[in-house]
Length: 249
Image (cartoon, rainbow, N blue to C red; front, side):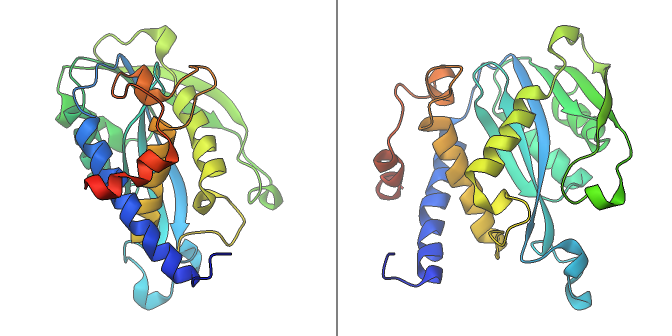
């Protein structure tokens, strides 16, 4: 379609992806969010975890890769994200990054992943209203595991610290955003060959996706972009403006 090799196009996308990451890192600061929801999204790079050659096992960037996400439940702004592993070290780095971008006390809801407990305590101390939404899943027939998640039997809200409002203990918005990510970024689509082949390309594609999501895509419920709703932008960006970040950086 372009007259250029596929790898040439892929390399070209690294530059706007990095420009989008740098821009959002700079402007998504001092946010006045009230309710924040966090989650982790699974994907893989190069090959599935079970197919990694023995000599490359344990090497980050091959196999399972997780994208940690933090969303403002009111404006739907993607506050920050981290591409890494689903381990305590990455949880701490991610939650510290979230804390550094907020200007006031918030109510935070995460899933029941235990690594959040220490990470939130170390990053926020007592200056947060924090709750977990612990979901209980039923067993799934082996033949169905590949195509559908297990059935959620219960969702138990659990107060961890502060005084979180029980009405707002939820991860529904950030989980719905996971669908937007999988539908909008083909690297996250299951059961295809569109997965990322390199970690660097994967991270830049995520930054580019969230730039478009935050600043250019009109949110159906809001009637504007999350960035405008959060007052970090004064208009919905065009694709040309996003590409223009290359010149400004």
